[in-house]
Image (tube, rainbow, N blue to C red):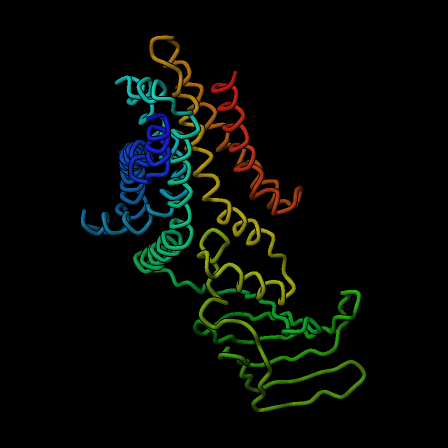
Length: 380
């Protein structure tokens, strides 16, 4: 009889359906409440963006409510993704407070469940949603944001490429040469007027030395090359050469080289690594792009950490009191994590700390803080 009971307990223990039922229930409650929190945050952002677009564009141009709504839907997703960690913090906190209020956590603890089994489903779910956010939602939000900038520029009647001095820089694939390009103006995007090319050789120590200068009446950027018209090439110690047409190699992308609004924040996840390589080949610093890449890679961990923090601060039994105070502490700590992340980002951009540390420090510290609090709460 004893052996039979032991066998039944063993079968019950390895049964994945019975073992995962409570975890699935907790996970479902967390997802629902995170969705509610996301809806509230999104509504606030939509309202703010609607008012901002109405004031900035609606006053200068005649825009209907539907047009303003369309611009708002293009602009808001990028902002929502920035505040998405708060959806997991507030959602998980609300889910566990509700479970505690209905004495469901008491019942689970009475059944011998550890708090780790409450927190793990919420954190793992947040981590998986973070992966989806980085790989799918971030490129989509970036695409919508780019369209917003284009539509806004068209509405305001401004071109992406403005008149005036234009400066570009390019390098070769081996990093042995660099070219600085200046033009007085451009006739259209990629079509420069009165352009000057300064070509430098880079020695083994990374020091540039001037090689030659090319002046061209017109320079047109095409895939893989510049087409120059009425060009004059002058090298040190040699007579000048004149060309009616001249082609030189280029690694600049004609689609993005002149889009001045391109920044690390507006670069989608899948384009960051190629963009970093291209910028470094051109001789520029790609620190902000590296920081953005590490921040996106750390996003799933940040979501998991915020979810764990929300759960830890709501495990105290209702009958012991102080639940509201703990919830306030949890929200305050979540805001502290957010501002610390912004501080690390600023320090990373200024190259005070490495980009890797700036991107990963906050999620790791937040997760370790949540685990430490959970150990203290569970084991004393």
